[in-house]
Image (cartoon, rainbow, N blue to C red; front, side):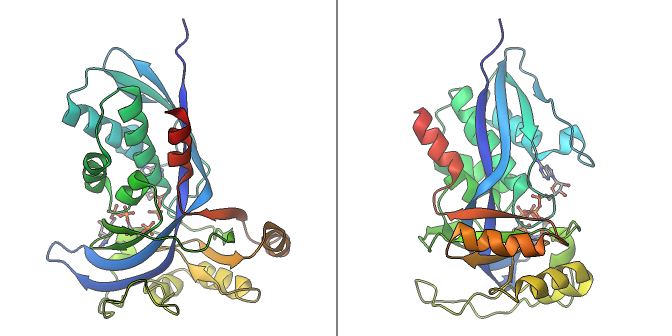
Amino acid sequence: MSQARLTLPAPAKLNLMLHITGRRADGYHELQTLFQFLDYGDELSFALRDDGEVRLQTEIADVPHDSNLIVRAARALKEQSGCPLGVDIWLKKVLPMGGGIGGGSSDAATTLLGLNHLWQLGWDEDRLAGLGLKLGADVPVFVRGHAAFAEGIGEILTPVTPEEPWYLVLVPQVSVSTAEIFSDPLLTRDTPPIKVRPVPKGNSRNDCLPVVTRRYPEVGNALNLLGKFTEAKLTGTGSCVFGAFPSKAEADKVSALLTETLTGFVAKGANISMLHRKLQALL
Ligand SMILES: C[C@@](CO)(OP(=O)(O)O)[C@H](O)COP(=O)(O)OP(=O)(O)OC[C@H]1O[C@@H](n2ccc(N)nc2=O)[C@H](O)[C@@H]1O
Ligand SMILES: Nc1ncnc2c1ncn2[C@@H]1O[C@H](COP(=O)(O)OP(=O)(O)O)[C@@H](O)[C@H]1O
């Protein structure tokens, strides 16, 4: 008898601003950043195995099975919960890797929430976010599923509700390593922390931008092209750049002009992640 599959989305995120306010003794950077989700992302399907094995059935280029954040998340949850069950997982990879839109972290969060459901573990969000943080600084916001102002290394989250415009996201054909940008000696690491809440308008800078555009001229090129139509910003450590539009039609119009030379996509901003909306509908 074939096993029913649980299929869940793994949305992208944008960093609407990103300030680096310091560096911890362990080398990790202290940030202030604003996360918002996109209604656009990967898709994961899960089917129970009763032999306790965790198997990702889809190969992705350059990411060995056991290093994939999906497999690492599933194994960590299995180990921490003592669950005897296993799982087969299929991945529809849509999000560019090394794009600063959080694909790997989002895949990991969807795996944690999906398996919590499938294995009937009953873990609460705090516990899942705590385990997620061990997999990556970006995982907790995807576990919680609400747009947030983040501090610490990205794990101290205050829910926020910014406007939800349509975005055009351009995808320069380069993969940026987060570790490489954070280890650049020229990176700004001393932006004074914003103490006022909500974050005052005008704080939309991304401190990674000068270092990223110096190393990757393709990113600077994309920012210049999009900047002819709207304020163009870098998300995370790149490579993706984005701009906001009041309607899908306007985003599509600019997309049609720019994607002749550059890859990109149009998606709606979302303060509640589509993963959480889908899980809510299942319960
Ligand atoms: C910069 C951000 C902003 O949202 O996004 P991306 O551009 O990667 O999507 C994130 O903080 C990235 O989170 P994530 O991609 O989960 O990073 P991790 O796997 O934890 O860390 C990768 C490497 O980046 C550096 N790192 C990461 C986060 C942080 N606050 N300080 C750091 O110095 C560390 O050198 C670490 O080894
Ligand atoms: N499921 C996954 N999806 C994407 N990348 C993954 C995954 N598992 C591990 N990785 C590794 O994590 C790196 C960063 O991926 P990703 O999250 O897409 O970028 P970013 O951190 O820039 O948003 C990839 O280059 C890849 O080596």
